[in-house]
Length: 306
Image (cartoon, rainbow, N blue to C red; front, side, top):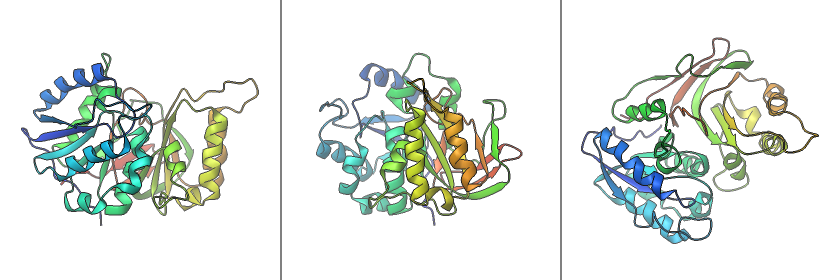
């Protein structure tokens, strides 16, 4: 049974960590005014400003920030500053019993997908796939709708994907229901063969990515397909594939690649959701029950907090 974190209240403390690449510090500072508007306090991780090559600090330091925020009784939610690369490096060192004993809101996307998968499968805790502070919310052109969906942390509400926000297309007809899982395709495929291999059995699977050529998307979907992850799924929610265009003249189109694998397994699927590296970015809880009506292009998701 899923462990839902407690909802936020005004005055609660939010912990900010950078478990992947170094976040844009200017954007991060700018995002703090948004958190003030939400009525919460901020606790910054000790190593949020660290840089170690393409990582936001050494593995042990990024891991320490994660552990400290879960152990801190005052902190009621943890929001990642940004993604990039690096969460898979610390996954095997995480104290999952600490997380299970101190369930709280955990929010991010992109490279954070590895942590979403690992935390959910090791502890049963619901996490949130949503825009991050430095990567999204702190930008000068941050979309108000992206900010709006943080409100789901303060009150248990059923989420319905808003009509008209993006053009949705039914890929495979039918209806499907199951626990919502997935996220970034690159990170999902990178779990295969590890102790944190993503479990898609009877689940609704969210897929999104950025800056990957169609042949790279093909390679990752083929890996998931051969591993049985696509045929195991109940259905698919295809999010945004930002800038996933060919860099060579001879190439399949992204839609042709997606059609090949999704239609091959013939499970209900809809593409075009503004979930992922896009603006606005609609936030969703992972690890809760969701329902997809592919013919009606409707997605309904259970609340992620209690």
